[in-house]
Image (cartoon, rainbow, N blue to C red; front, side):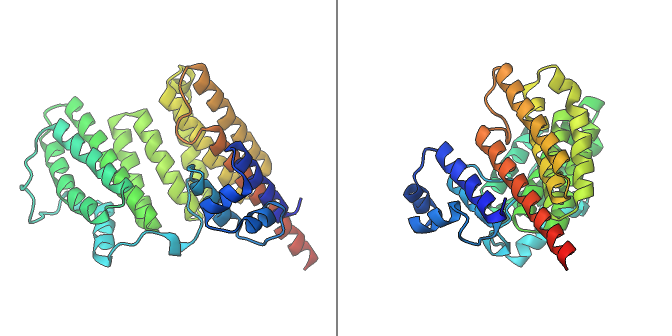
Length: 321
């Protein structure tokens, strides 16, 4: 099937799933209704991933990766971006910041609350406040780790450290600083593994896989996601909803990775795993978890189909040249 037509049909299907008319979707996209009609009929040449991202965002179910180009990324000053990059390097943990000591080490509960606050700042794209918070929090976390009296205390602090680096990685990924985002996500994964928290490690691996996929490092993305899914097999088999949800979300990332590597059968297999995990969530009485709503899975199916079409067209062009 022609790539433009396949994309148009995928968009039309998502529109109907949401009960929207073409004019209603056009208003959400700030486009004329005639344009939506032409897109759905495959008559308008558009960038496939840009359009999928725009439609997903308009319908309130964004894809995990923004492929719409650097111009759509949020802005941050060079100083703030540089501060976040420095935090991601890990050196911040032991640097004697002038503010060190300004916020007393209030125990693991207080440190965890500040790490949760960091996630809120990252989601809200308050990057200056995030950099200031983490640059103060991480040295205090290191102090607490150095002084921790027992293994259980260190486990809790490693969990907080993982959450802190997750927030840093998420912010850097939104800013397009993929190399530093990879470093922060890797630190989050290491801290979660040291804590022995399988779910936190899998969540960190999910974030790392997203960054690797956006950076085009497909082999590393596949390896990271597959290891995390293997680690989740037992808790998912025991009916732990969070593990089932994460396993399905990782399968979706693996499907997109396989599609971009030109392996449609592997992509289809992972989409099947994601659908199975979505059914498991319903079986255990939980609503769709991270990335496992029917609409989200359908968008990944459309993205995989488009990637396969692009690969097929490229191979045909190579053969003809």
